[in-house]
Amino acid sequence: MFLYNTLNKEQLLARLKAEKFQRKTLSFYRYVTIDQPMEFRDMLYFRLDTLACLGRIYVAREGINAQMNLPEHKVEDLIKLLNSIPQLRDMPIKWALEDHQVSFLKLKIKVRNKIVADGLDEAVFDTTNVGRHLSPLEFHEQSQRDDVIVVDMRNNYESEVGRFEDAWCPDAQTFREEVELVVSELADQKNQKILLYCTGGVRCEKASAWLRHHGFSDVNQLHGGIIAYAAEIKDMGLPSRFIGKNFVFDERLGERVTDDVIAHCHTCGNACDNHYNCSWDPCHKLFIQCDECREPFMGCCSKNCKHSLVSHNLQPLKPHPYVA
Image (cartoon, rainbow, N blue to C red; front, side, top):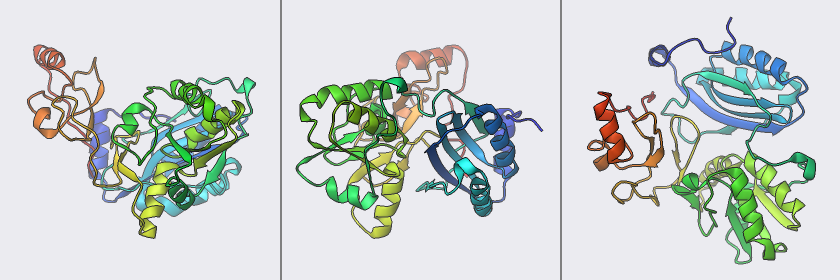
């Protein structure tokens, strides 16, 4: 068999449409030593493909970072598979809040230098000296205190549509830019209690170690990230302190956590929190656009991109075409 996708987009969509079952979306990560990343990658691809898994997975010597989906009747098989691999045994899994949409078209597993592109030099700090992991309930309670600083460790386009109440959301477009900004802006508050959060927890592992390396004494992080928080707080019947949408890096581009719409259409300014990629493919900018603007702009982020689309006789991209 091929250890990579061989189908085009139309074939992939047809395959999904023909499925007679629902899919479950999940994510997991672990910092663990993988001595032979390429061999590990090939083994994992073969075994996940056998279970009809789809998703995006990064493998590196430092560990694994996975976002994926699979047929709901294969969940137990996946758990058995993960437990059969020493590096992945007893893997904590975070399940998506919404499963009415198919989140991935194909299975893609890549070997990388790092499982998160952080731009940090591990030689200069101890990556294992991380902050204290807080359960969702602990984070929920402590984030309401007046003597804590809650910091969003995601990019600005993520926090634009959803964030924790009273959180500081640095205006950064990359993780490397953000960790350096946090260290700089909070330099005179190194003895303050810091609460970090991100989507699933993986970015906070590196961020908390980086802050501790720079002398921050009380660094804490939300274990399992927003995904775990939203699910557990809902199960507990508590009002969520995370408001709006949780941005996710798959075809859904977001999971609604609360009904609050805190963002605005980049075209007209009306309340809206739906992300799209510009229909003019050379641009492909990620932006927010409301339904009222989407049709007249043909799914483009600007009049210039719409003009380019029309002049090339192209059709606008269909948003979120992978609805189950």
